[in-house]
Image (spheres, rainbow, N blue to C red):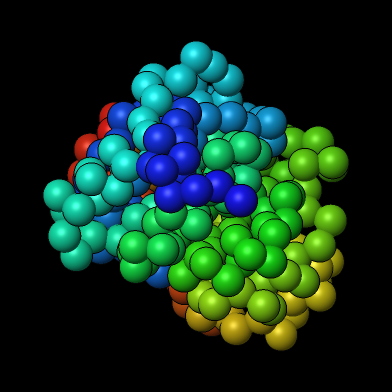
Length: 233
């Protein structure tokens, strides 16, 4: 059991300094958010736009108290815990508990290959889970073994980064693979890949149309459209 004082002094390793921005993709796109980008990821997507988060050294360390102070400065913002792969961080459970205890709304971005503990599951308000398609070129061991835990999550969404319209057939196969063919289709989010606005723009209309026909939700990646390949936004 960690005491209140120990929790306040608990240090979290960050791949980016804490930053305040708009949620760039997914169900809460455009929502003012504090972003906490944790260090570490072993998934290894070839098109990853945060490869600097995979290994150290961290950009900075912040105590839980400092993180909560930053969140307080941005009243009304939700908190997005991301990475890297946040569930690989040993600081993740303590951070989630602290954010929940002060009443902050918390989203977690994850690849889904590490199931969350039950204590973490009940403290996170929204899960944005991104199983990887073949274009990511990751090893099979980094694919989720199960996504059954999504059925116990408060606000679960599946999010797929897609580069070609025909990859939506692969999305359907992923849903079937994990027994999620009955997962609400408006909770399956398609986002176009690309690190810059120019790379992403030409995919928007084609992917929007096929997503709509299948009943999937489609969101552009707002942060890429506004700021391009820039960190801390």
